[in-house]
Length: 303
Image 1 (cartoon, one colour):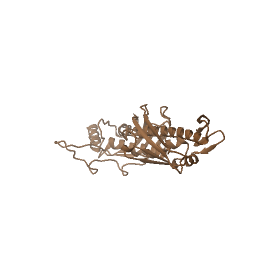
Image 2: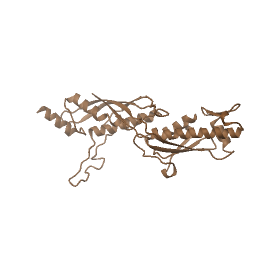
Image 3: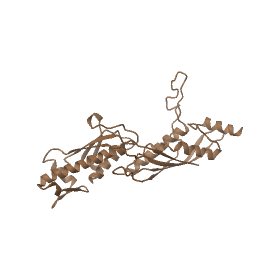
Image 4: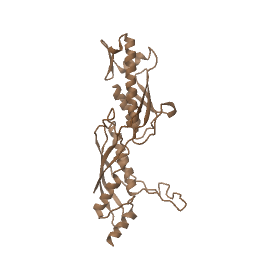
């Protein structure tokens, strides 16, 4: 058995989203971050939470980045963090517009109107978001909001992985019997997707630790540029990875979001090396810890 902890950052950088209120009370949410790991849904959920409406009323779409405000790379564990923040700002902008339009419609001072939990509240009125959206769609210009973010506050996190292995002393092959990954995820906006991110990252880290390696010939050409010769882990190599979500909200984000996807790549090699050492008493200092390398250390130990 081996255990290891690891840390990774997330990028902030720039993101932009645009929201348009439709006449049926739904909202079209346009973003420039490609959906990876369910981020499109997580961004829509942050937008809906800010407005106090159901996520099912949001219609998120990833569009050509030429048609939305500038959005940085989809990667670096930044999408749910940074583009989600832009969605939060767009929802706040939409709230301000709705309050101003409702005050004009009701012929009252805007200071007498507020937006609370998905409802527009006046001195003697209280209407839902959907009701005001339908009414405003016939009484003026469209409701279009925008939100941007450019935040680089730290949002990284820690993960701790525990692995049980079995090592074949005749071949050096390492079999994983059980794998558990616990991670501080800030606020898990969509827990099922977060769990999938932890599992996927752990698999990538396991491949890094045990199998994946580039081979080049004397001319510098890669000799194993296919999935037959470049060994990535498959479902036949791994048990179900048990993911434990630990929620410690990030104080630097409106919803406490932290980067998730890259953190679980960090601990696996160290956890696997510790497990191999505890199983057969050898240390490995080079990745991947492939069967030939493990066997080499075992034979060296015997001699």
